Length: 457
Image (tube, rainbow, N blue to C red; front, top):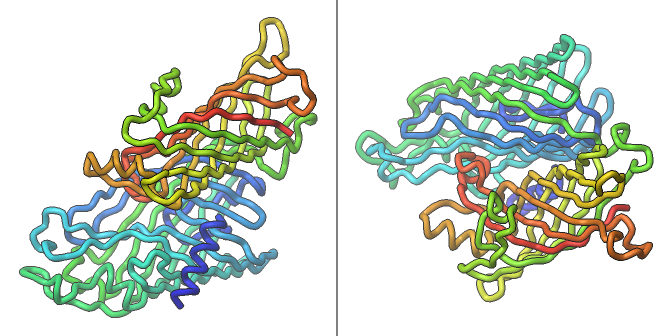
């Protein structure tokens, strides 16, 4: 079973999720054209059903994609293995926001923290004019609760023009390991006001409503709410104060062009790809504002250069701004600090263009990218910086990028270098959302200044 879970987790990390989700925190962009990426953000609001001091307001960045085979719905991602008009089957991964921290509550003095995790599994869905029935099996992929969960959800969708409403009801069965991790108390953890307790397995019910409103062709807003009624075995736990949990998730996003349908791209640039190589040094300063204004001195903490390969697809093009969807693979050279490792990045790039006076000849480009970065190891510089401040660090962070370059054919007229550019790229792993649970509540990052060559084909 453990080997199956690890294999499923690896497959999920390389994938991205099915069409309709049952989670309050998931934002399916099923109303967008196939192949559409989107960026957005939302506020997660919740009461705290357990004792202890936990934040109930959380900022969640949203990285969304709806493809033929792969999808990413913010807190859920996966792959469609089979689908037709009435039946769908796929694999998925979903972030579990449950956690308990001892804080200053004396009753929790001996309690170990209960951490959030990533669950992975399979999903099957049947739908028709009567609605949609979806079954899911999920298991822990990070070894936190080591448990399993089975969800059965009925959902119906209403559409009123640009407004979409989708009420749902979910029956959720959790095994003893899962329920015991979050709501059980071991003999070693028990103390005054907190007796030992084993809840066993549990069955919970969630009632909710997902809403989506298309403000413009590109901009959407959403608001989701869910009410979870806990099983008696959970409600009797000394860790639980309330039998119900109320959660809401509200926010907005922006839809970029489809990577499959290029109607928004000039005809002579339809199907355009970009290919970039870059390499550079670890920087001392932060991307904003120092690196963006040319303060490119090397780090005084350590020297760990990087090299990278980036592939991009033109999403929409115009005379002043182009938007690209990009995937980057960076190699971190950690020298004697730790083994070298790979960093995987996905992001949206907005590339502005400037022209020579009284001409349509391109003089320079400048761009800014936003997305996600997953490193096989935490970079040494992040460990050093965060440890010195006694703060968190994580492998999964936001990603920011600044790029400025000039066309090579201004200087070298050689056919293989036509539509090629050279300049500077600033690579930044970012803790910009320091209060985001899904990003480990990290408030720091790291920066590299790189030189690049990029060609459009």
